[in-house]
Image 1 (cartoon, chains in turn red, green):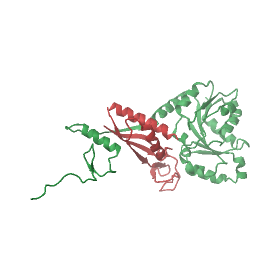
Image 2: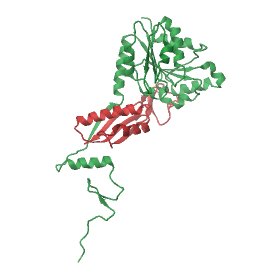
Image 3: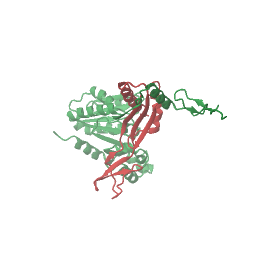
Image 4: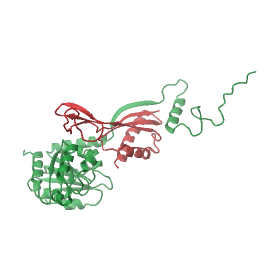
Amino acid sequence: MHEVGIMESAIDSVLHQARAHGARQVHRIVLRIGALSGVEPESLRFAFDVVTNGTLAAGAVLEIESVPARALCAACAEEFSVESGFIYTCPRCGALSGDIRQGRELELTRIEMS
Amino acid sequence: MNPVPDNTPADEFQIHPLSGAAARPGTRLSAPLAAEVAATLAAGPEGGAAVRSVDLRVPLLEKNDILAERNRGYFLGRGLATLNLVSSPGAGKTTLLERTLDEFGRQTRCAVVVGDLETDNDGRRLHRPHAPVAQITTGGTCHLDAAMIARAVESLDLEGVRVLFIENVGNLVCPASFDLGEQVRVVLLSCTEGEDKPLKYPPIFKSADLVLLTKVDVADVLGFSRELACANIRRIAPQARLIPLSTRSGEGVAEWYDFLRTLTPQR
């Protein structure tokens, strides 16, 4: 359950931004979570309620954008997206790839506040 | 004479105190929306968008990532090869390190940072006069992070040390997300765990530079298929080097030491 720690650091950033903008209430927080980040969105949601309690972000909507993985095929020198699963096979030549170009994201991307 | 139209909502409707909207009970505005509406009303008659949207790109593990880069620079500056060993509990990390310190560690000076939730058992097991060891007890945290490594390394005498082993907390999930500043991430999978572990815990295997298939001496007794396990590792982690080994029988251990030597070129 490292999601609690990750959510704490996210809410720290959110509250820092909110104070910098003189906001009184945070309404919406958008996170981008990659398929390979090792972070479970459900656990993040659970942690969110606990961590925001009693802060400017209490009651805010948590939006989680999932980022699918993309890998590079060395033989074709072309990137391909991985729709599901963790075995990355090039759709053109069928080779396996471990060269991950997208999917490790773990970012705070938007805050809506007033 | 026509009756005057009555604009009062029917009895089952209620006027929302903030928005002035008529709604049936039970269809109240959600808390965030109510706050948004309150803020808009409070903005005054001149209007102006009270709700601001700020787009940014803050990595959630920013603090850890910065500290990890600092660690990496420190290790690089000292000419120190650093390996982060991760696996589930009981895959044989400590046993492998004991043998490595006794054999490889005689020629090349090594140091160890070992993490567990509780006890200094592993730190004591790994203690050797020729190899400094630091034990981290996380007190319940399921992984090591870059700050713990920075603190632990401060307590070690790294004079002449060429290889630093970091034995992570036994856990195949959380350590995947935490960069420690290591040069090489080593994931251990033991033959007692089942051939499909890489398929069940892909993120950690995806992040591996080297996978060690351990306890291969008991594979046959357990009915464990080395071929199937290796095929699964290659499918999930084609980027990683793979060494099947047994610390007890010694199979594959020489290949492990060769790998360590490639990280520590003679200067």
